[in-house]
Length: 154
Image (tube, rainbow, N blue to C red; front, side, top):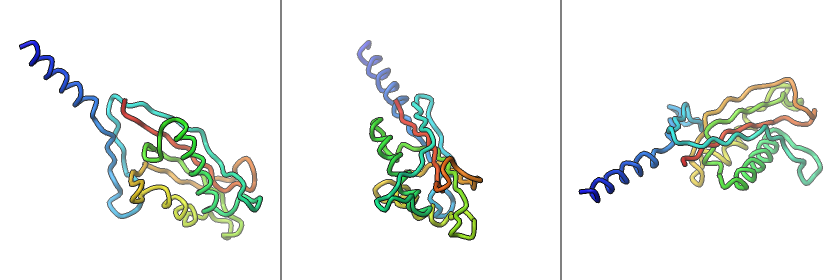
């Protein structure tokens, strides 16, 4: 009888620990989650704002190139922590108006870069996300800064 109780208790504990992060996709095909629910036993990982690196040509590039640069840096940072982009549950995106786009933020360029990393067959997990235009970032050439929060179950 003690063995049966131990087995049931162990199975219940495994079930509690097996709770998953739940993502609710947007009702259309837009590649974000409208909400993410985290179980009680979750570990959060906050990453500071990440900005682009210069490309091989010595420039930071346009919004799409900067988005890809930033997401590659975030991906590498997460990897060093034993995490992946699939663990990202929240993203905040700061976009500066592009002088080559009539001084408006290049949301399409951002989405082209973002869509290479999120909502793909290889990485289908989508974070909740806010994207906003800001007056400027630390360097005038920077058009993109991204902050993320990743979550893993313990």
